[in-house]
Image (cartoon, rainbow, N blue to C red; front, side, top):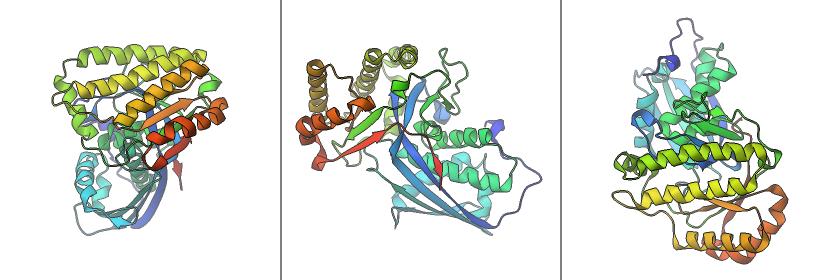
Length: 358
């Protein structure tokens, strides 16, 4: 239990019903989080940026209930989803000690995504972030004295208890989660906004997501994280992530695109190599994922472009590149990469500014 985040207000506003509506972004990690200890504590620090067009919208309606136990109904894209209820029950069980007021309400949770669910675009990150922000809205109605810093910090803390990477979606632009010597102010419990200087070229990055496979993953990220506990390369991976965090800090400050590309692609391939060398082994990439990577390398060699790729826990490929290359990269996608995308589907996105209350 983390006492800092336990709700303990003797004098509070009495509320009987209401609603909250938030839009929260997905995020794409540049330094990857893979592997966790108990209570969603990461084994290594991570760094990500928020997306603009890939988001979850969640509306929570609440009404006071005579039932002493938390009760809720969950609707995803207009349909009641029993299949999600066990995950949400586990989430509420994890956070109820910090949000005891929730036991007084019946909740109706309505959620929708702007992108495919469970396909490696961090849908759990945006979903749990949006839900946690709605919960904090309820808390703020009860305790109006909560300031913005505490609101966002606790929202990040709560989101982490649903999905680790979700804690990074509470911040705009770049976000860091996990203790390290590179950023001593960072925490394992919640994310912080990137505290250092960022060269302007990295403030306008584009991210085009190539949808290689929009089906639900056959092996969940949760299961994959647990396999790092006894992974033969876990110590080396933790060391690599910390070293890469320092390198990308330097790249972001200096505007060093070559170093940025080197680190980002190394992190993506290391993430998936951990999956392929775990016990049991599993592969989330598809043949077309590798074909796209090969095309990117060939294109970059021929054109001297500053495009690079990263992968989340799935088959889809994120093309990350400076805004000034948008037109040329769109041509490259249509000429060389579209054939490898499921139904020719891709999403043009860019670095975002974080969540928005609706």
